[in-house]
Structure formats: C-alpha cells, structure tokens
Length: 99
Image 1 (cartoon, rainbow, N blue to C red):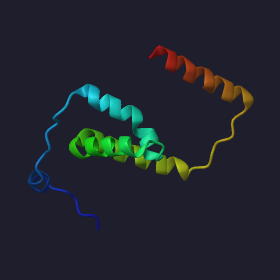
Image 2 (image 1 turned 180 degrees about the horizontal axis):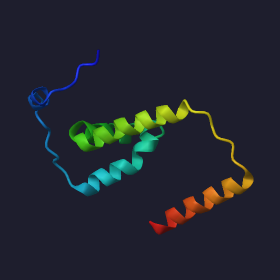
Image 3 (image 1 turned 30 degrees about the vertical axis):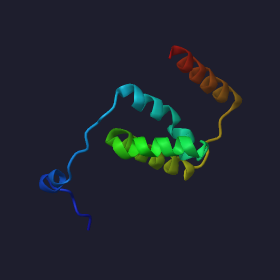
Image 4 (image 1 turned 180 degrees about the vertical axis):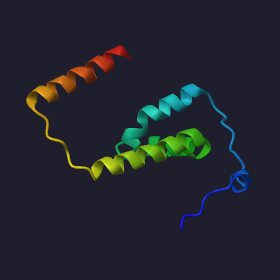
C-alpha cells in the first residue's frame, strides 16, 4: 500500500526559497546531461551540486531527467530506415537553428 502525502504533511516541510536569478538556473540546466553522465570536471560537479542543493526547481528537474534517462535505457532501440534517420536529423537541425 502506497502512503499518499496529505496537504498537512506537505505543509510540514518548509519550502526553500529560490535565492538566485533565472539565468543561473538556465546555465545549470544546460550542463545537466553531462553532469548526469559524469562527464564534467570535479570542480564543476561540486558547483552544480551546490546549486541543486539550494534550488528546489533545478533539483526536481534533475531528478526527472535521471528518471527519463533510466527509462530510455531500458527500452529497445527502434530500427529506423535511412529515410527516417535523414528526416529526423533534418528536424533536429531545424529545431537547433530556430534557437
């Protein structure tokens, strides 16, 4: 049986304030994939861990990203035709250019 959180139990945990600007979170979010894959230098990892410890929004996002990566790793890789791969590549490049 799964215990559900009630409104009262949710209120018992004090919310941590968001003490920095949005730009800082955006900079952290851009590095999260490399962080999760252990591809960053130790000093940068420590900086990201410090940010995550003080930013509930980013902390929630990284937890969600880790879960997504885990789910994807347990799914079979779909086989795509050469045409489908080319179409997907084109769509990705168009989306990247639009940024």
